[in-house]
Amino acid sequence: MILTLKDVAKWYGPVIGLVDVSVEIEQGVTGLLGPNGAGKSTFLKLVAGQLRPSTGEVRVLGHDPFRTPAVFRKVGFSPEPDAFYEDMTGLGFVSFLTRLRGFTPSEARRKAQEAVECVGLTEAAHKRIGAYSKGMRQRIKLAQALAHDPEILILDEPLTGLDPVARRRIVELVRELGEQGRTILISSHVLHEVEAMTPRIVLLHQGRVLARGTIGEIRALLDQYPHRIVVRSPDARELAQALLAAPGVVGAQLSEGMVRIDANNPDEVYDLLPGLVLERNLSVHGLEMADASLDAIFEYLVK
Amino acid sequence: MSAGATFLVARNTMARHLRTARFWLMTVLSSVPFWVALIAGGELQQFFGTTLFLSYQVVLPLLGLIMGVSVLQDEIEGRTITYLYTTPMSRASVFLGRLLGTYAAFAPLLFLSVLGSGLVYTDAGAELGMRRAAQSDFLTAHQMWATAAFAAAGFLVYLTFFASLRAILKKAFGIGFILTFLVEGAVSKIPQGDIAQLSVWRHVALGFLKTFEEWPSGFTKMFPELGHPGGGEWRTLLVIFVGALVVGLWAVREREVRLPASVA
Image (cartoon, rainbow over all chains, first blue to last red; front, top):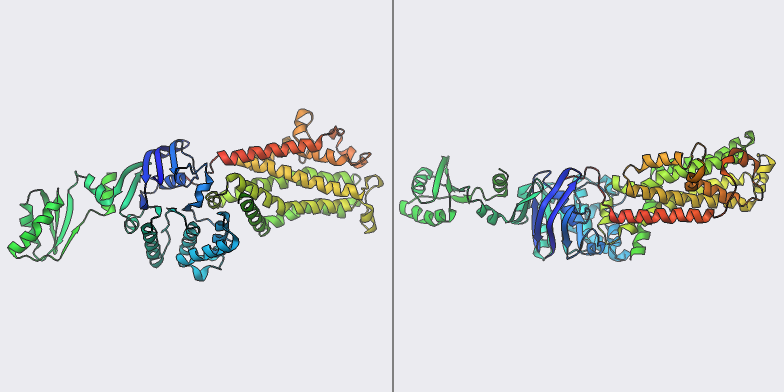
């Protein structure tokens, strides 16, 4: 396994950072989700060797990241704090850190240029970081994590402060890197951001792992909550009436041009719906799962 | 690879120090003994002793304290240490690089200032119209160089000591400041007894005084508590330096760094 935490706890004096966390992270993109104070940054700092666990064991490619700096040849870390050597240029900053990773000056500069281009900062590469906007600072942070072509990327809130265009670019970049076979652990408290990058998540709440798996898998675990299906139709009333009679459907709510169905087993509704529509000559304009989103799942889980 | 990375960190540290306002403030602080020697020397009876007191007992520990604490503190407060600690460099290499870069940026200031102060008391200084001290306070060229060399060595010991103290303690500046009074006797008299053996400046001063056949009168009047050189000053300085360095390297290796407001 590429990243593992086994029975890990971390306290800051009397304050709990993480409790009893055992997680294995595999190749591809994994989102680390949770509200502010959930323990996301502590989790990432442990994996990035910035902190030592109070108890338990953290392993990155089989090594303790706190004790084995050599592992950072294969790991890139983009920290959450907005901190830089302000007097350096963006390219100079990335080149400097790439050289510290063992590359020659010319190699480091070439790799830095590629990374800066990758995050869309070529034009501002020679400007002082002190003159960068918040979004540019986020991107240069990402560039230094990418420059040495790491197998593992650890990104702490990388989308904060980005404008929509830059955000989209970074989301696509993360997805691409994941598809190339890298291991990417990315934290965010904005659920839809992570949802756009990966279906695989680890949910943290008050220092504990609340759930992990794909969004679908986690949703399926929440059997006590009926699944909500939204059907958009000009014949919503008739459709609601018919579906309410179906087994497993526990409720329906009508509103303008749509009906929200609560069902214990949504697959039964999907199987039933085409027959109903044909039989009664109804129109359906749209069909969606309303509570398979991360927001909805997270809301259920922390209740 | 580690030596090269240490050198890179040292170079980066030095370059960044040179661009700070603090560098110019330290330039002013370290040049005080020289300006005192040049301007007020003729007016002071114990001229030489006063200059050395300023150089060795005030400027040296204060500069060592301020810059020693900053070796790690700057990176921690600026939160940039995370970048350095997520490279394949060992933490010890980062610490050494920072220490060397800080020394390279500030030791020349102190060296030049003390050298300039010494020049005032030499025949060469007299030829330049700078001799204003009492006859007994004159220095040979060898003693002038020795003054500056001991100051540079003392600065390295202080710098390492306070950098290591910061690696162990978050409140290193406050504790270090108290130490400069209790152990070093900055702006006061050196304590007597065993604790005097811990005083870096005492060893620096005694080592320097060994270059005289007879101690300058101004100096002996001012520091009767120094006693006479008993030998082994360099060895003691080396022991303090190596001891502080080992403790500092151990601390950066073993202790995690908590950035400001890092609880998440």
